[in-house]
Picture 1 (cartoon, rainbow, N blue to C red):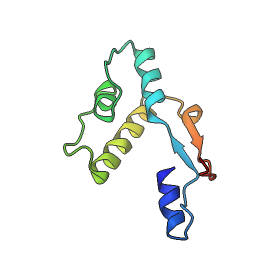
Picture 2 (picture 1 turned 45 degrees about the vertical axis):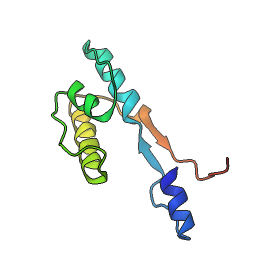
Picture 3 (picture 1 turned 90 degrees about the horizontal axis):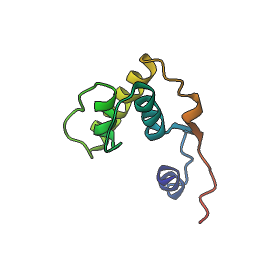
Length: 94
């Protein structure tokens, strides 16, 4: 939602209308595989799927790369990610 708002403030429309919610998809993957994790932050999610997080988290570039790695790993491991795909709500009213 924050990206839509920023683009709106620049008199433009953010070009993405769908996104993948990686938190519940990774939780379901962990449950299916019998993997326990205390946390489901991005670095922890990567460890759940057996990937090492790139260093420099909380940096837009690194977080994007880590999210891509997580998505690819979930997909390669047979996760059906369609149920975790959400449609962006264009109405930003509070």
